[in-house]
Length: 515
Image 1: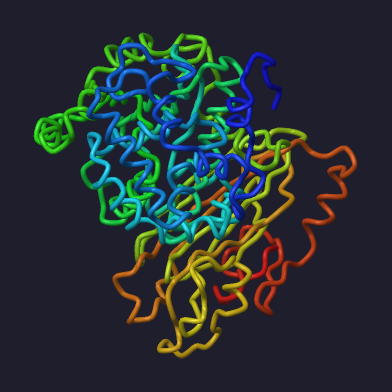
Image 2: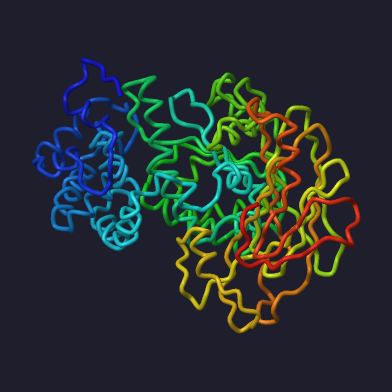
C-alpha cells in the first residue's frame, strides 16, 4: 500500500498487510517488546483521538486506564499465541484501539477478558493453521456467489463516518440451500474469512480514503423482509450460533445496527430480547417495522451515493454486488433456485430465458438422501438427464473439511444400506446450453432413501445456471456438436434426446462425474 510520508514509522508499520499468518509478523514482535509505560502513553495520547467517546483511547478514566495496563501485563503471562489472537487486526488497527476494543467487551474487566482469551485460544489456533481460509471457496467447497445467494451477507458502500456498511438479508437466509453446498463444520472457514480477510479489505479501503480512520467498526443493516417464524429452524440457529462464536474473537466491531422491515412476530418479541442484551449494545440497535422510516434512518448514516439501489440509493444493487463476488468475471448473471420435491409428489421445475449468443452451465447441488432425477430441457427438448443425491462418507473415513473429490474417492458404492455413512453435499454439472431459448430444469424425488436415513434432509436441490457470452473462439455450431456427445456418469450414460421421458436412463447418485 502507498503510505503518507507524514505518517510515523509505527503508524506505517500498522498499515502493513500480513503475507502469512503462520509466523508472527514484525508488527506483533514489536508490540510484544513494547514497555508497559509506552502502552500507557499511547492510550492517553493516541495518534488519532475519538473525542467524546467513552472507553476509547484518549478518553479513558483512571480506572479504565489501570485495567488496560493490567490487561497488557496479563497478556505477557499467557501463551504468546494469545497475544496474536488479541492483535489479529494488527495490520490495520493501531494498538491503543485494539486494547480498548477488547476491554470494552467486558466493561473494562481485564481478568474476565484474559480468561476468555485463554479459553478460546484452541479454536483460534485451529483456524490459524489454515491461515484463516484466504481461499473461501476452497474452504466451503462451493462458489462464494452461490453461497451468498443462500446466506446473503455482504459489505456495500461506506457510512458517512467511513465505516463499511454490511447488508444481511436475514429474511432470505436458506439453511437447506446452504447445506446443499457445504456442511456446518466447513462454514467456519467462511466466518473466519469474513473477519480476517474480507473485513480487513474493507478497512483498508476506508483507510485509503482517510488515513485517520482508526475505529474498526461496521454499520450492519439487517433486512427481515420475508422472514417467517418457520425459517428459524434448528439448523438456522446452528449457523447463527457458529457465526456468533467466531465473532467473539473480534469484539466491539459493531458501530450500529438497523433492523428493517421487522415482521409483527419479531417486533413483539424484541422488547423481551432487549432486556437480555447489554445496554451498551442495545443502544446501537434500532428496529423499524416501516420500510420508509428505516430508509430515512439509513440515509442519516450513509450518503445516497453509497446506498444500494434496493434502498433508494444510487449505488449498485445487492444482486449485482453478490454477482461481483463470483470468481469468474465473465459471468453475465447467475440464475439460482432452490427446488423442493415432496416425497412421491409431482416434479418441481424452473424455467429461465437464454438470449441469443449466450451460453449456460447448469449445476445441481444437493445433500438429499433420496436421489432426484434431473431433466434439463432446451426449447422443449431433453438436453441432459441424470440422477443426483448426497455423497455418503465411507465408514467415517471422511473429514468434514475434505473436498467433494475427496468424498467421491472415500464414498462407498455398496448397495447395502448398513454401509452408507453420513450424508455430505454433492453436485453434478451440465455444460454448453446455447441460446436463444427457454431452459427448463425439472427435478423429481425418486423416493429410494434407505430406511435408516429417514428423518434426514431429502428432496432439496439447489439449481444454479451460470450465464456467459458465447465465446468467439467457440462458435455455436461447435457447441451444438459438443451437445451431442454422450455424458458418462458412474459407468452409465445419458444422451440428449427428445421429449419422450420414458426413454430416460437413470444412474446411481454415488460418485457422479461432472458432465
